[in-house]
Image (cartoon, rainbow, N blue to C red):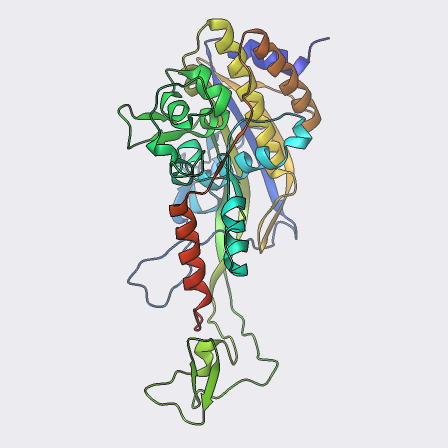
Length: 429
């Protein structure tokens, strides 16, 4: 018996008038609608010596309005017909949501009962060759192309090594059919060679990539999956706190130094050669009140999966294109559900989903066609059946490939550790 969700997805993918899939999730803070939530903070102006918190905040933005079918796809209006505006703040950005979904797919493969392809960079061998315990711990990593910022074209992959000596980007890209030559696979996998891209790097098909340098042909693909959580009607809430020193604190009249052996020395009076004890972490931890969270009229996650992007991938046959796009659509849904199940985004921001809907956008229609999804289990069953359909057309996921840190990459990590462990002062901000 075939899976109903898989058949529904496949039918809509095969219909050229269907432009994509959209989703909306309405959230409330765990503490209730009146509770404030903390948005992500970003780097501020380099000239800002006070290091004030920076949020993705817009003073005046259009407010979504609900249609009769429940979708929040319209713009709210004042009684005179003018668009209603209000402050808005980003609760979780497009890049963050994509990263959460992509990483969840890799780390939760056991829940999918699917082995995903990819490249894993392992530092185990480099760690074993180090005599420094701190360096060994730092080198002993395993990061995949599903977790790295630039996916399979990330620098940690390009300058890793397969044979323990030659860096991958120094290989001769001759045979794209052999996993012994990853440079050949990476440089050949492209929207024009989608069979290879699907088999080795399906996450790149969904979340995009750009191979921008070091090759004769530069490959790129736009993001197909896009999702963002936004607070509309956002009102800033100021907060501040001072952490007391349980040991009683230290006078800034005293002078302190830490030598190369990381040994603290204290003098009764501070001199030009000594620092305040607070610079080494002694004393109270004060901060000034500032806007740290927001109470929002509406917290809405808006998600889209562009079938136009997925249809731009060129496979060997129309049957493969349909089968692969079905798999990728269900994989995107699985990542979305896996990454949003607990609703925790960061300290001070725990959300509860109170309403959710999915629908197909079709050319010539303002109303999304409904897609009913019962939950992750239904998506997993549909995904596994779609993978079997793809295999019947000659498409399948390749086995993941593990490579090692090159000597140069190990040197970068070692230098970082050496620098960090010799730091003695703290940031008072």
